[in-house]
Image (tube, rainbow over all chains, first blue to last red; front, side, top):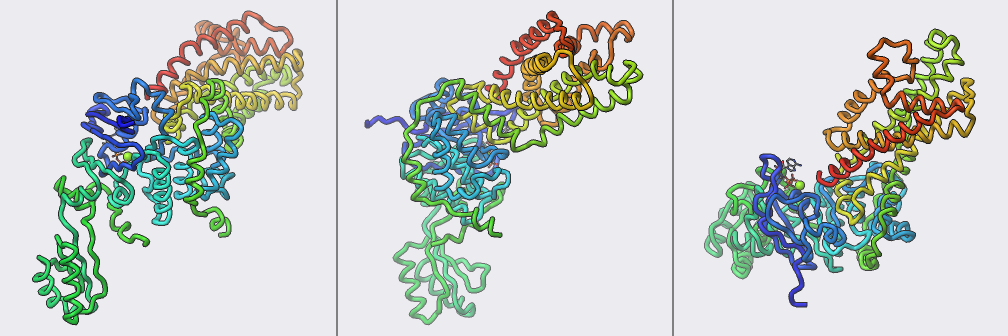
Length: 328
Length: 278
Ligand SMILES: Nc1ncnc2c1ncn2[C@@H]1O[C@H](COP(=O)(O)OP(=O)(O)OP(=O)(O)O)[C@@H](O)[C@H]1O
Ligand SMILES: [Mg+2]
C-alpha cells in the first residue's frame, strides 16, 4: 500500500481554445484524502483544468491521471470515481431538488432506493422543505448545497469543486466549507478551484497558485505565506493622540512601523510572536490604551502580489475584504 | 416570510457525514436503464413546463381553423370536405414542428452546467439523447392528439376509424423520431436556442408549405408540382391521409418509414459524435 497512486496527477497539461491558451503548463500532484486548492484570478485556467481532469475536455498535450487512470484513455473508469460540481450550476433548474437527486441515483444504479437516498441528502443539506420546489426558485445558497449534494448521491473518491462559494453570503459559505471538510474527513479527495484567497487558506492542505494557465507557486498555505514574510502586528489605540508615542515604542521594540489610514491604527511587518507580545505589554505599561491588537499571517493576496508582481484583485473582484471577518 | 424561514434551513454537518459514509457504490446499471432514466427526465419537463406544449399546439390549431373556414369552401367546395383533406396534413405539420423543439431543448441544455454533470457520469454516452427522445415522443403524441380532437369537434369523422387514426399518429411520431436527429445536430452546432429555432423553422417551412398538406399539387405549376411530389412531407401526409381515410397507401407508408430510417442512420451517429466531442 506504500505506492498508492496519487488521487490526481497532471503532467504538463495544456489546452487552447483557438488562439486562446487557456491552460499552458499545469502540473499537479494531489495525495488521496486531502483538500487541494487551485487558486487563481479570473481567466487563469482553473475551470479548463477541472474540465480536463473531469474528462469533459481532451488536453492538447500533457497527461492527467485520476487514481492512476488516464483521463483520456480510461475516461470511463475515471468517471466512475469522480463527481463534478461545476462553476455554472450543474443541476437541472426545471426539475425539483428531489427529482434532480433521484435522477442521478437512478443513473448511478441505486434503483428503488434512489428516492430514499434523495430524501436523506436533502435532509442532511437542509433543503428538505424545498424538496418539491423547482430548482429555479431556489436561493443561491440552497442551489449550491443541492449542487454539492448532487455530487454525493454516490460518494465519489475524488470530487471537483469549481468556485463553490462564489456569490454566497458568509453564512452559506461557511456551510459549504463545513460540508467540504466533512467530505475530506470521510476520505474523499477534493480539488477545489477558487479565486478566494481566504477559502484556499481555510480548507486546503496544499495549494497551487495558477496564473495565465501556468502553476506559478505551490505548497502548503503556511509555506506560501512564509515565502512572503512573517506575521503582521496590528494595533489600534483608544486615543489617536497617543499614536506618535506608540509608534516610537513599537519601532524600538519590534521594527518599522506603518501608520494606517485609521488615525488610531498602526502595523508592523515581520513581527515575531514573542517580540510582539513584549511590545504589546510595554504599550500597556506605558499607559497607552489599546482598543484592539492582533498578530496576523500575511494574506494569500500578498502572496500573489509577491509572486506575480500584481494583485489578484487587479483582475478578480476581490472578496478578501468581505471575508476578513471570520466567525469565531 | 414563513416560507423563507422554513425553507432556508441549515445543512447538518453530522448528517452530511453520515450520508456520505453510508453508500457503497452500487453496480453500474445497464444502457437501457440509463436511457429510461433520461426519458423520465424528459417526461418531468413536460409536466413542469407545460407552456412548451402551447407553442406546438396553438399554431396548428390556428391553421386548422383558418384554412378550414377561410379557404375550405374555395379550395374543396365545402368546409367538411376540406377538413377530410387537411386534417391529416395538419397532423403531420404539427408534429414535425414539434421536432424543431427537440433541437432547441438540446441546445438550451448545453448552455447550462447540467450537461457537464451528465457528461462526467459513468453512463452510456448516447443515453441523454435517447432519453430526451422518449420525453419528446410524449410531446409529439400530445400535439397530435390535440389536432385530432379539434378535428372531431369540428365534425371530422375519419373513415379509417380509431385504428386508422391511431395508425396515422403512430406513423407521424415514428417519422419524427428520424427527423428530430436533424434538429439535434443543429442544436449541437448552433450557438443559441433562438438560432436553432430560426434555422429549424427556416428549414422546415418550405418542406411543409411546398407539400400537399394544404392543397392538391395537381393544381400547381409544373416544376413546383414536381418538388411537391418528391417532398417527403407530401409522402408522409399522403400516407397518414390514406390511413385515416381507411384505405392505406402501402407504398407511401413504406417510403415514409424508410425516409425516417435513413435520416436516423445519418444524423443519429452525427449527433452522438458531436455530443461526445464538444
Ligand atoms: N469554451 C471556450 N472557448 C473559448 N475560450 C475559452 C473557453 N473556455 C475558456 N476559455 C478561455 O480560456 C481562458 C481560461 O478560462 P477558464 O474558464 O479556465 O478560467 P478560470 O480560471 O476558470 O476563470 P474564472 O475565475 O473566471 O472562472 C479564458 O481566457 C477564457 O476566456
Ligand atoms: Mg472558472
